[in-house]
Length: 532
Image (tube, rainbow, N blue to C red; front, top):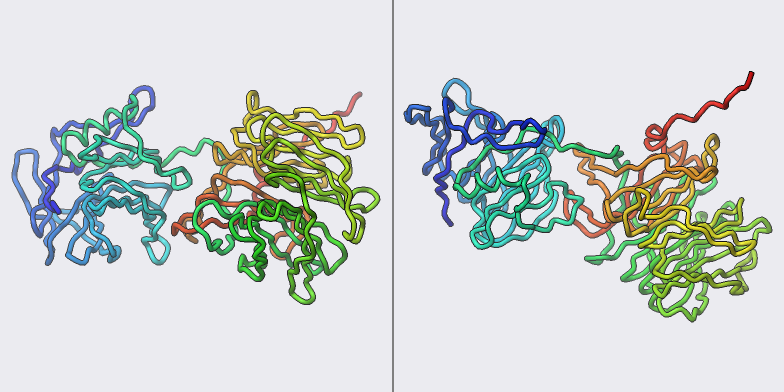
């Protein structure tokens, strides 16, 4: 490995704002000191060229980076990460952590007050992403690992992007936000030019001190479940089971293996290995039992389960055979006569309506609804006898079951939904009436609509909790919501599937959010107009 980078780092902040507000690099080297490193020391180089050692190490220094007036470096054969600020001709260094990988390049920049992004290349084709936290222990926690070409020796951070100098492909970039896909792309846009030019000159330019700009309101998760066992696309759809004592369980599908059940702390308590279970929903049978229905792509069936609190049990009941080639989306609910309605769709554009009797011992297929592309998320509104369906590439439909009328309520062509449209559920707000929440998977966001009248109220994202080390949520498939009071959550919760589970990087799981956090973001309820 080449451990002696010859680039210089300006001690002054090397970033500014252009007239149009775009973050750019200031490459002027006039009247600023610079830093280099050589063997076991960091050297400050004055504008006149005088060299002064400001840090001496007992072991070889491997890499050096700067953000604002702060330096970060790696040293030692068993690599250690250090951080410090120049003061009166010396750097006051503090060891942050011992790492289990090499340090060939470092770049770091703030995310919010007291938290910084740190990216480290090991030179062997791996980029390690960490969060460095001032007020938490451990201070440095892993977020994700990215793949690159080998021999990455320099990087720099803008407000939103990580830039890498790839010796084979040129300057590449990826989004700093770990909830994005983590794919390296060529840095060839106008906004990239200053950063790309600095890396091409073999200079290690100071990373930004500006924090990322969040364009949508964020909430943070209160809790996350344990991860599913399989890698890749596995977790999909949750359902919430609320017990009489206000405790609750979360059912979660594992579309590679079966149906999982978690307690209110996110710990798995039951598992039914029924194959590729895609979507799940639940209705209460009495104060101690829930009936669950799930779409089974392996058996091509609607699976029925009984969950019982008193004996802490999840039991497979039976399967209803389907003629659908690939059962996919599913939702259920009781109608005004307490009959159980189950709706199941497939990847071939059909949604079937099934009715079960009150004891779920008999069933009847009532109707089929046809679409021109795939559907998945759906929710049955008992009070209206209406089905809401998410068509992945088109929008949200309303189907009046009494007359089979179908109307497109929200289109991705005109609204804020970004395909794919995924999970749907309804929150029963005592003041606002029913609210429909949808997963806008294409931009990792969620939208809350008022149903009567139909109106978008809020678009938001689920962001990271840096202090507790819980990542945000992205690429969400299914979601579930309840307005029932729960232990610790007096106005209910939202549960979403997390398609990219970070901090640390792990298999997919589910995140839980206190509804009060979302209520605080909703617009004020309009006062009724009083006429004179």
